[in-house]
Length: 519
Image (tube, rainbow, N blue to C red; front, side):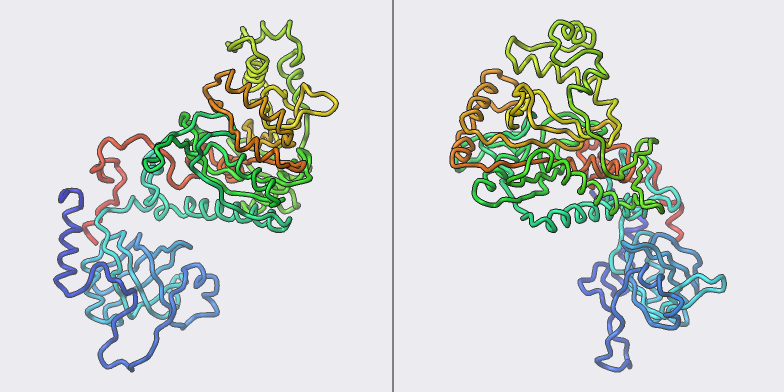
């Protein structure tokens, strides 16, 4: 692995060690200067933008900055450094006759990408740029890999996702996007807490997968000698909590579905699921709308006139409430051209669009109807829009409508032609739930559980109050709010195919910093 690192950087590492300096010190503070007053504490470290925001009023103050060096101008007796921390960039100036000599000497061993500390007076250059004029300098971490070229960052989309750690420090916009992701999730969390919800954690390993239709990842527990599944949804455990008297619960859950990679799907993703006793599907609509609005504000979507707008894939979406609502049957008839219940006209439509009915069961028929809906209707649902009252046969966990049990109290929320949320008036009849689970097993749908979750049925038998529940795909929502084309742009570490050559350097991808050896 010796050739994994750059020879020039290895040499400078050895030179730094030979000078008596530690290239990876545990302590970030500066060593005392001979003759300096004992016990004198220096300034506390500050973020670059905190200093720059008040640079006018703080002229002449001594400040301390840490960060990665991503730019250098000047050599010999004077050097200007671009020092970048998580908040942004600040310029530092190191002049030989002002800096402690043994510390100034470390500049000879410094490369772009090294992490440094600079302490000095905040002032301005002749052109008016706020600058830290250093009196102390120290390399805190010696980098053995070249950073990407200053003005272009990592250009290759796959390389950016694979080396996110480089993409983040090289591109302020990328870093800010992930800070916004955190702010969006926190804003949604505040909505729940303001409504007296309790945040909970439920198991990731399930003995029976359920709560959604998806192919699971499976594993084996050695001590118990049993097969377990990474959860495809936390739903059934959250509803057990409502049975137990925790009437308002939510969970930001990592879930896993053993399906393909696409612009909108990653096998491991984040969803928020929430359940409220004595609510229903329409209560969930109102709460979902609040959550989307809170997230939009945190993402910076608010306009000067107070409206909420975002641009996703070159299309503008107005997220100002209230959101549109349409019944499944009405949307189906509008875009398919016949009623969802028209069993004479639908076979021809299905054949035209390559949709097959798996068997003669009611579930298989309605699943084919819904496949047609997904093919012809969902792309037209630009949103934001709630589609409600779905076919009951494909909603085994939703309560059938009292006035028409062929349909169920369920909605899906669409935005940008994507489904972002799914909600039910929760089925709380244990006998009916047992029958629906048994139907799933008989149908042998590969994405449905192959056994009945009897413990969940038993929980219902103790009494689940009338309740509404919903799950929101957090990553997809953030995609739209931040205007990102693919889901991997909002995931810090998306799943990738194996790297062909792990030892490949940035130069191999034409991404290296030009002429770094001169530093």
